[in-house]
Length: 313
Image 1: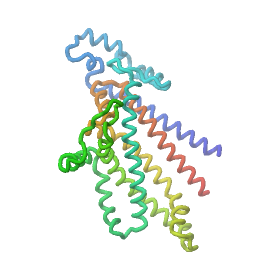
Image 2 (image 1 turned 135 degrees about the horizontal axis):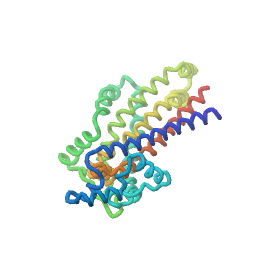
Image 3 (image 1 turned 90 degrees about the horizontal axis):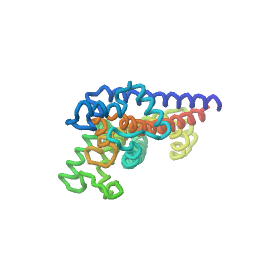
Image 4 (image 1 turned 90 degrees about the vertical axis):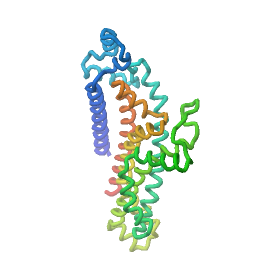
């Protein structure tokens, strides 16, 4: 047990190190972009003296490593600082991140349900008509980018059929005014991920079912459901959990694009504006928040893998 805890602690330390390195890279890349946050905040008519004063106020005249360390020291305590326009980064994240989390969470739930059901059906009945459709169809759909899926959904369900709205409007709470406005953004995110994950589920189930202990269970006359739940799924679970965990990061990244297409009130427009304004503080805060969420999910998948492997010994 002590050895396993040390291994897991080392994995956590490596993941944290990678996240910190990514945040430092974000600061460096934003600094290398043409223009800076001071010019974007003051506008085109600002004089050189005003720009220089604003750069000093924002600390842009200091080296990037120094600025990153100052920001990171505050971020560790939960203070992400202020934007170049004087807005609280924490307040912006509190107002936008829940909407993005809602969108990604619903898409993830649909992805898990659809991929598990279809993947299990595909593995159990490989020669059925549904399976023959899933083989080429899932490969094709999983290769389509989210923004292409979003465009096609708008074309069909908004413009041609006029069933669903193509643009998201918010109520006083800041969330979509109608549940119908969530359908197309969620579908645009979930469709490619469900197609990819059902292939992973099917492959993991087939590989696990070919193990010798599964053949022995079948020869001993155990029911098909018992064999699946006790002897197949536990051994396929690490691969499935890792695939789902990877999809969390993909969904967050895809959500930023899909939100822009549907005018969804999440972090998509905010991150696009922060890059346009060369605001490294806001960009890094978004990366830190989403990166931490993704890291936690990946660690959960690692814990599932460790638990299953321990059960094999």
